[in-house]
Image 1 (tube, one colour):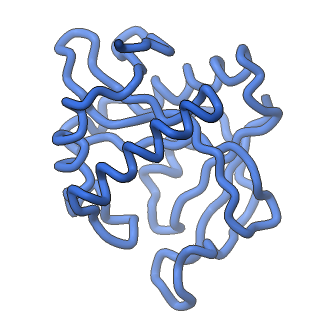
Image 2 (tube, rainbow, N blue to C red):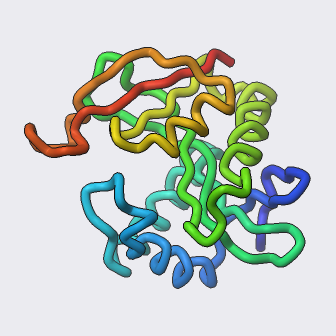
Length: 177
């Protein structure tokens, strides 16, 4: 049974359905969508990601929400929260993040959903501070961070990426709740 967590004017942020998996795998294999990630994901990797998202919901009650357009019911990606624990001075913490199909870019969906998620995080008292981070070249994601009121904290080297990798240096943003 679906759980709707958050609604915006144009979007529904809900639990994941089995039918989302194929569309999500297509999104995760898209070179344009995944250009600022180490590599596109295989179907197996994408499904494993959904399994981890669902596990995080079971453990914490929060996570990366499946996003659909109210008017059409189309699944377009995710926006929401992820608990990160990698080795960094600001870790562990809660991240707000998004991944939207490029068919739906430049329509304000990530910003609309993320702003509503921030209010939801305040209301539900998820944490005192939300972080967001991305590889330095990912200007589109950084623009969303700025639009939702986040503050630049600094740069860090992402420990999951090898030294010298073109995506290793990341920008870190935060917002106090």
